[in-house]
Image 1: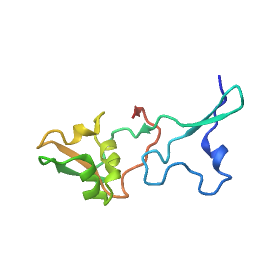
Image 2 (image 1 turned 180 degrees about the vertical axis):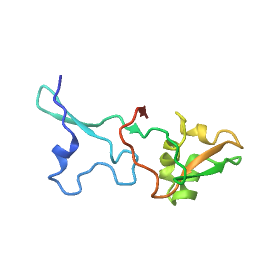
Image 3 (image 1 turned 135 degrees about the vertical axis):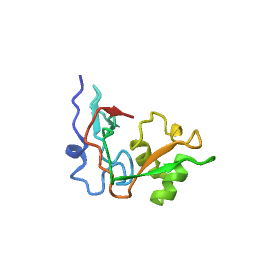
Amino acid sequence: MADIEPYENALDAIPGAHPYPRTSRYHDAEIGIHRRPDGTEVRYTKRRLLPPLVETEGETQSHTVSSGERPDLLGQRYFGDPAQWWQIADANPVLDPRELTDEAGNVIEIPLAGGFPRADRGDRRV
């Protein structure tokens, strides 16, 4: 089996070498390095573990889905960035983010900007 090391060991010596920006859902994901028999290194992103769904009173607000809403539109509305839809998906028990907005009238939780807890390496996976 190939040796795997976290990206901190491989990339920390290079300023700005983190592969994902701080706003990415993969920023905190570990980067593995696979060494092929010929010595070539192949970097890959390990599975991103989601935070466990726990009672988040005071850390989220409810949102009733309207017809035509999409996760990216909610990301823009609540975070000012459509790419932040993943924060809403992480706060709700769905496997497919489209489930968040597929039915008008659904009530979903929206994390408060800057207040939602980061992943703690729980059991859920994306």
